Length: 229
Image 1 (tube, one colour):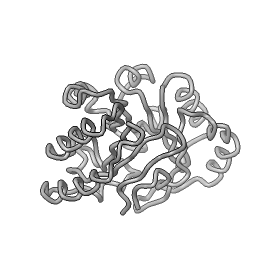
Image 2 (image 1 turned 90 degrees about the vertical axis):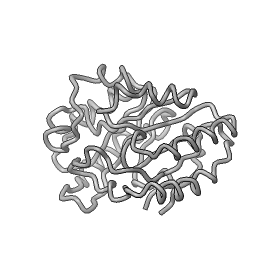
Image 3 (image 1 turned 90 degrees about the horizontal axis):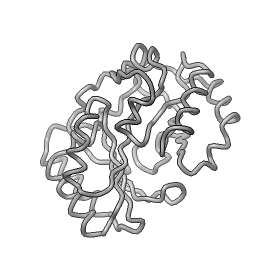
Image 4 (image 1 turned 120 degrees about the vertical axis):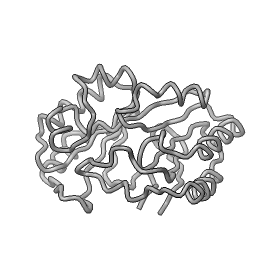
């Protein structure tokens, strides 16, 4: 499992994949990422400290991801992240959180006392598909509700049942209303959901220009950030 990498193209930063407690929800129909969760805090901290030791601060920017939300990281790990940010004079931190924690984001801002870009996995702005089929448990009316709390949105493309119109609307929202966006091309895993190869090929042709948009990162493979397995 790769847990540290340096992203040198868009939004230059270091990125770490840390171990955390189980996702509070853990019921998304497309996700088996939660298998990286752990209940042993000593084990989590041991692994996380080893990973964090790789950070150099070369871009003064760090992204922390884990198989749940930033609120599920152990306290000692959070304290070590803060120590390293201060030691390396880093001034930008990317953290990911489930929608359910939106009203607690200020706790992370107060704790780290450094500029934070909060990312949220929305997967799609289509309410029925997001909650009815993907079982995301992210309930809101429209993108304005999300923008009130989060600066970066992750969406997913290529699941059987998605339509071109859904994808077009999602990308239009990302381009016009958010500071950052990540588009994940769906990779089949241990869940029953299937990949729509035709939709993915259409997307790659139709939205090739996104490769040149600085604020949008397209993950054609789920390990394109250089972390994971």
